[in-house]
Image (spheres, rainbow, N blue to C red):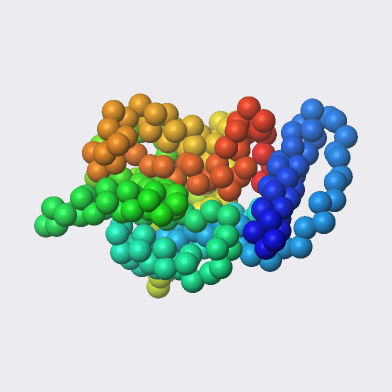
Length: 259
């Protein structure tokens, strides 16, 4: 009976989130907004996001404020296999079905002095899938996803040592700086930085452009089954599309969203 109640609640949550997004589309077309009451009592977070980084990734996902979606975002400060194992423990500490979805966010972060790093990266993705945990990975690092908001890199290899300078070049016109030495936390995403990521550039939302670029790069990869070979790429776009409710862009596209 409890499982049946949980399924019903999950279905109602999804309906409410979908209806909210559909109202955006109706507004765009000048159609009347349909108000529906699904009588949902919010409680458990719908999505658990466990991040490798304590600051950057956690800052980023916490700044998505979706009225119809409850997120729990945790920054652990661990990577690959260890991160996935801790995520499994975190999920299993809760009753079965407490979260609708569980995601891990981590980087390949290749190291010349640690040849096992990329092996662990692949094994972490495999372990996550075995345990029904979704993965939003970046190769080499999460900052590559941020860079795709500003430029289309076509998936050519880029060392993570270049990320900070390139990001700061794009942020300079806004008097912003990533990894500012004045910030005691080091790498982080401020509210102003996040607003730039959402803003329009040449008539198009940067975040929508990032999704399209990352998706195209990923679709063109020849080694999807071996993520350690997929430099430079990121699957963060899958998680962002899930948060924005645009997994099925035939119903609602990114550009139609108002946020």
